[in-house]
Image 1 (cartoon, rainbow, N blue to C red):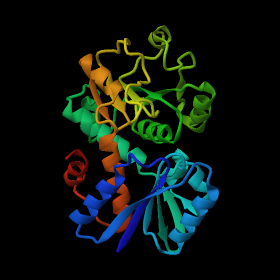
Image 2: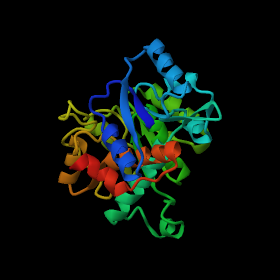
Image 3: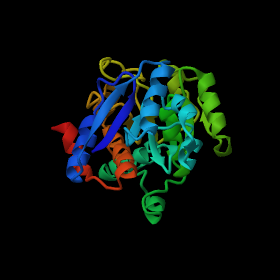
Image 4: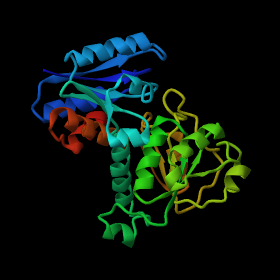
Length: 296
């Protein structure tokens, strides 16, 4: 029996059990996926669970907020990706070594490309097609938020050829994160606090993609958006909201009402989950089955 699970808090809204249960069934594997809610700052609870993991009682764990950074102190080795991002969402054992990895970046990029291709986005131009759909030379993105999810998104975009502007409610936090990607020259929208329309319109950097990595708009606060309702976005922009519960966030709904291409992070959730599942089991679950498990 394969024992998998998720560490974080709160976890009541998590779709991961449905996704991984479907993956186990589709791949003909016996096992379960459990939720391990650990209250923030409960280092003893976290340490105790990791001890069970090291003892072989658990075969694989996902990590979500607020532990994507805190878990690092319990890990023996980080993969290059996790080290570059500075956050972990997947842990596994190999030769008695506890390894931390991050599948968020690849999961985000895979779904972003898929969504853009399906919407015939001009961001996927000739240069990207020549590079297998993975290059977007000369395109700009703005990322809202500076937490663990933002780290993965920025890493993915920068390594895919995007220029990135970062902004957050606490500009100093955004600057600290940008400094961690110093070799890429990440820009900071220092006059933007996510609310005033005049400041947003005054942003000096044009952009083709807006990614919300903040929890604003997540259940149960579904009437919230990181942007003002009356804000008119550029007609060419693609809006990607990492929030996936509700199915259509207010940010996505407002963008679509303006005729813009927009999506939530459900596809990213499925892709990152599938990548983690492959690491733990060696099996590749069918994405359509995983998607069906959370939309039916």
